[in-house]
Amino acid sequence: MSLPSWIVAGSVMMAAAPALALTATPTGTPAPTPSGLFRIIGHVAGQDCEGDRAGVTVHLDGHARSIVTAADGQFVFEDLTYGFYFLRFEPECPLIPCYPPQSVFVDGFGDVTVEECYEGCPAQLLLSPGAGLPGTVVDLSGRCDAARSGQVVELWFDDQPLGDTTADAAGVYEATITVPFGARQNAEHAIRAVVGSAEIANQIFGVTIGGLPCIGDCDRSGAVTVDEVIRGTRIGLGVAAVSTCMAMDSTGNGMVTVDELVAAVDRALRGCAAPDLMPTTARYTRCEERPCSAIELPTHFMEVCVANIGDADAGAFSIAQQTYRPATARIEGIPAGGQACVELPFSPTVSIFADTQNEVDERDELNNRLEAPLPFPTSCDFRIPTPCTPTATPTQLPTPTPT
Image (cartoon, rainbow, N blue to C red; front, side, top):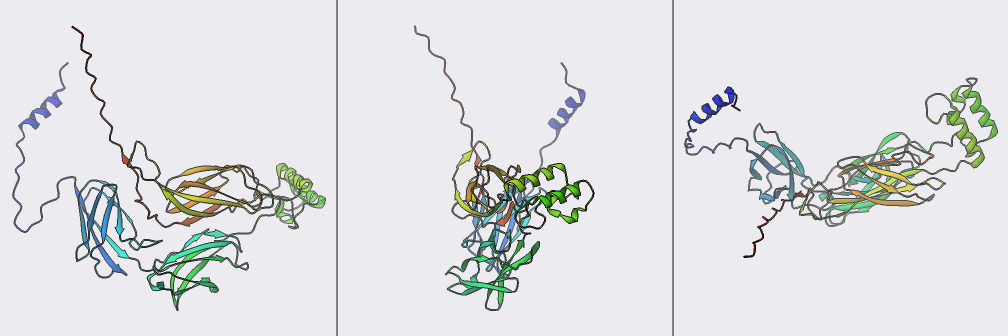
């Protein structure tokens, strides 16, 4: 079989092409970057992005490369190809990094410049949970250089004082607060940390609407009466408006169905006790050092807890982490007033959803989500294991034939 003429012609042209001449670089002129290779050129500044920080170690995670910033705060990583790179900086501060890690994308069109600033007082508080009903207990933490050595940190909910705490020598402050019972529902509020007269950090806390009433409990008395079932029937027949008993319309679609009437009768016979699942906390737990892996595996893990704040036991249900590295787990039921915890892959920003398959008939289906930022773990590198290099299969020598 003969080759197509265009392949033959192209091969001849390539063979006949002269070699590229290499010209000397003029004295004092930087050598050009080789084709297809680029640089990350960075600068580490002080607080408020002012000045230079020398002696900061910059790690190129996953590539076993690091460099220390010069007197002018500059650093350069050479010979990088197209793709994403993760920069990590040392020294690291407790709880929240003072030099936040950066993900850098080399787009293949040229060198990339990076500016890194020291955060003496990160403006974001860490809250767990980040939303809930009035009266919710919230774990709070933060870090600030201005709060070091025993400074008192005052905690506020909007403009209402909640108390205070004392920072340690590293400026880390922690506290447990209770969302005021009078907080306006279905609204965002600010939890604030103040030193002296200066606010050093704040974080939005969403106050959710209180638990939904039992289906058919028109007056929210905690029980469904025969009169209320009759009222629901009239709404279903179109004789009365839904506004006369909003609790009958459990789906909020503006009508009462046969299924909703049956559920209301069931509540009238069995009572209004019902479970209510709410994710409460997410905390970094551990990391696993894996030198390499044949597939992408999580290396860091967190514990996620779900409480049953209802007055009836909850059966088995699924729980999911929906950001960064989606994952699911199974909880085999929680008694009324109890709590259960599972371990999931770590995510810097968690979005936890309990009862993802709607397996539990809850009093309130709107409080099944927890969204909160978590600090990057510092006990080991935050990285994905590099692929293992396959081991070559040894060549099988033929068995000698006896003579």
